[in-house]
Amino acid sequence: MVNIILFGPPGSGKGTQSANLINKFGLIHLSTGDLLRSEIGAKTPLGLEAKKVMDQGILVPDEVVIGMISSKLDANPDARGFIFDGFPRTTAQAEALDKLLALKKTSISVVLALEVPEHELISRLLGRGATSGRPDDANEDVIRARIVEYHNKTAPVADHYAKYGKFKKIKGEGSVEEIFERLSKEIDSLVI
Ligand code: B4P
Image (tube, rainbow, N blue to C red; front, top):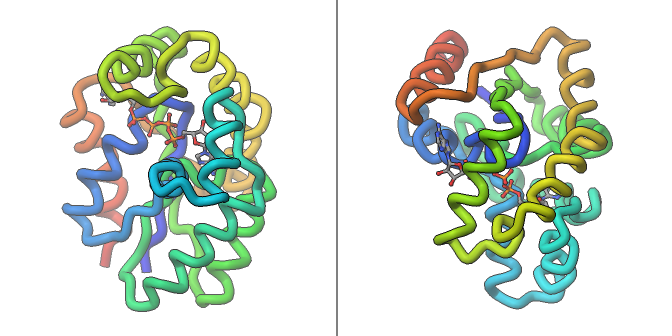
């Protein structure tokens, strides 16, 4: 099995690249952002609670997203692998993911971390906010709050995987196709 974490700050292109990578490599895309937005769209109790924090640019509680990922792993017993997009976003989430994968006798193959300068992140997210209707992309204060959350809570996840030699930085600037090529090269060396 090949299990990849696509890592990086908000707006670094995780969602954009995952959509293309799953087609090329036949992996299953697990995006906690997408899962949460689908709960919000369906107006479930979980979605209504999540919306309150997501609209402020802060992270949803660990137990909520860990529960969602656990159900999705159980629902796909025959997968040849997964791309985790936007998860794990805290060290507690990373530890929980390691345990969930160990139960399935597998582990993370590599963490590919997209590196993009902050001014570019802000301009990409404001650009999407102009058309997507995503409240967390709509104003610069919320975008900055998401970047602060990333530095405080998500960046330490890099150390968690670097300890095991599984962390790889990828230049996240350039065209979508150029970045796709960089990521594909890394995954090619893993895929059976
Ligand atoms: P996410 O949905 O994960 O969103 P993201 O980090 O903002 O976006 P991503 O990096 O995927 O950027 P994208 O490709 O879309 O999270 C949203 C919120 O959900 C979080 O703030 C949090 O509240 C909550 N949440 C999610 N997961 C959680 C977890 N595990 N724990 C707790 N809370 C969680 O690209 C952005 C824009 O850039 C797009 O418009 C795209 O077209 C553009 N773009 C992409 N690549 C480009 C390129 N190469 N050049 C120019 N533009 C590009």
